[in-house]
Amino acid sequence: MKKFLLSFALLLALHSLFSQKIVDVSLQETLTKEQVSALLFGISTEYGIEAYKVLYETDDTDGTIDTVSGLMVIPVSEFKDKEFPFLAYQHGTVSARDQVPSNPDVFERNLVYYFAAQGYYTTAADYLGLGDSKRKLHPYIHADTEASVAIDLVDAAKTYVNGQGLPSNTQLFVTGYSQGGHAAMAMLKKMDGQTVNDLTVAAGSPMSGFYNVSGELLNGSLAEIEYGFPSYVVWILTGYQSVYGNLYSDLSDILQPDYVEDVQGFIDGTITRGNLNELLVGQLTENHGASIPRFLFTDAFLADLESSDPANPVQVALKDNDVYNWVPSHPTRMMYCMADDQVAFTNSTFTDSIMNVNGAMDVEAIDVNPVADHGGCVFPAVLATYNFFEEIAQRDAILSTKNVDNQLAFKLQPNPASEFIQLTFNDLSNNFQDFDLRLIDFSGKTIKQLSTNNLQNFRFPLNDISSGLYLMQVQTENGFWTEKIIIK
Image 1 (cartoon, one colour):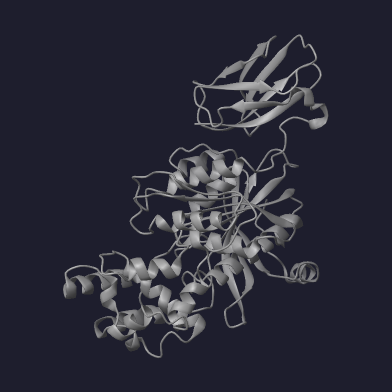
Image 2 (spheres, rainbow, N blue to C red; image 1 turned 90 degrees about the vertical axis):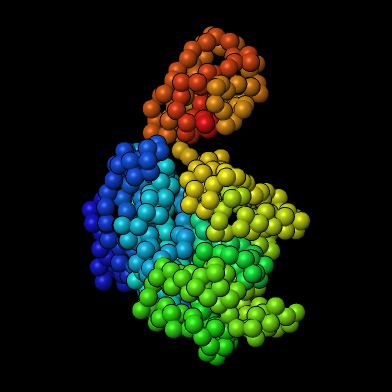
């Protein structure tokens, strides 16, 4: 596709059809699947991609309209009628306003590329107060706006895809890492049972997220323990003040004098979040021998916060942004690493427990690497999320479905597999002279093919096959049957 810039006339036309949110869509870059793979240190991908910056309208917390930015990435397939599902990715905490997915120089953008290159129309909102948003301060860990800006971007992306005549199915997958884990859970909660532009949530996989905001802030970030990211705590409180307006009257009401000037500079935009963190860690270490965020705050503020008063405005704001106490109606996984040094793994295990006690049918927290820290957890969590989503994603058959033979229906065990896969058939009442078995990748290429005249307890060897997602297909002169398989 060539560079796409919506004209004013087209904007007016879309407005009448789609409750207009798109302001501008512009192509930033086109990459082959090999180029995407190189960005991801050699992880295999299925498609090339086109990356677009999207400007679109969304509601700010005061009810005004803001024009915000985000990233939309489209997989490029040689099969022009191939239907892809949608996927919303929510990005993690950033150090500066421009360190967002719509910026081509940001590394986390590569994770968005990964999902798109595996066959998803993928979006990543920059959030309110970041990227091109007019809002001065991003409301950090604010569930409602994290959800709404992401939903509005998905809506805009689906409108664009429809307008380009690109086929899609009705599935929407939602994920995100770190702050994006909280944002993904907020989006899942807001969309549960709802649709956006004919898309319905098929599954969610928040990763290393901060779900129990009220509990973790009190029990973790404000406990008398060392923590290297005091700016996170400050950003939550100042961001909530910008939304709710009643957490404090002046910064000196909550902060010790040594920290007020630097925090005010962050609010005003004269210093970045990364700079603020360095300043706070340095001053805390000088004053107290270690970076202990609790010492940022006045005794009066801490006493009020730790009181049992349910009307305390800080406690009300924190609980308003908890995203653990609900029951997903769709399959949900929370990917985490037990050794995470920034987001306590108990966010995931606690949320898993609450959701399941409340009656969730398909919710699980999964430790994808027990020894990985927050940075090391990214790729294991992303790969686990992709494999989970592929169990649910509706994919076009590589061959025509006109000759599907239900008598060839089979199950695969184990799945995921590594050395071999065993095919167990439901009904082979007809006698067939020959069976062809093919392992096919998602570009349609046959990776391995075997022929046999006996499929009783048949084992298909896999020890020479690279890890990834494939199709296992059995074919006779009458037709075929296909199942997905994950090889690890």
